[in-house]
Image (cartoon, rainbow, N blue to C red; front, side, top):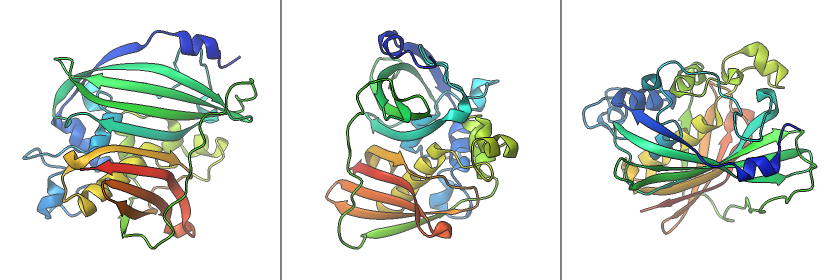
Length: 289
């Protein structure tokens, strides 16, 4: 069986040291489309080492970029889990920040399989990670939901049912984020070398017309849009950000993010206007300062 649930849940956490530099941060931001207007001082702050700001979603790739040296294509090399890349999709993501992420630094990251949910035709693998700095101070925690097609039906629990409803009123703000045709090719240099995002033949066998943008790229793009458009360009004002990945985005298409604000809680819905408003990110909530 590709998933041995008992073995996955019983396995000890894996621990790795992650080190990153300003170049890793800049490359990550470029992969999100930052720097298009390089004469804008606010935009330059994402892509120039002088007073470089760091998006909280950089936590998703810390220690995996150019400073990590040679990397291998992403795979499900987790205890008790052996799944073909063509059968998995990134289903959801949450991130909680405990301290600002430095532009260059080191962290110890612990990873474990926290749960495996049975969705009938698919399984959802919940992978949790926590990061601390050199002194043991918490930096961030995140939870990744990995959708494994054809791996359900083993009699497990289905997992929580979270509402995707948005407020029944007009959005308080709509943020528009164009993407470039080469964006997935740039973003993958931050560590996710899954051929689904670069190889047309591989993408076709996985059921897509052409390579798609990484779900975590869309996640970062929306984070940047909110920081720029609602948080005065200050990434430290973001406390947490959770989403479900509801649809794919092809490089060159646009992300349109509707935002409803209720105090420090933002409800978000990101769609693709080129495809009649098809949802890309749903169940999206951001807590801010």
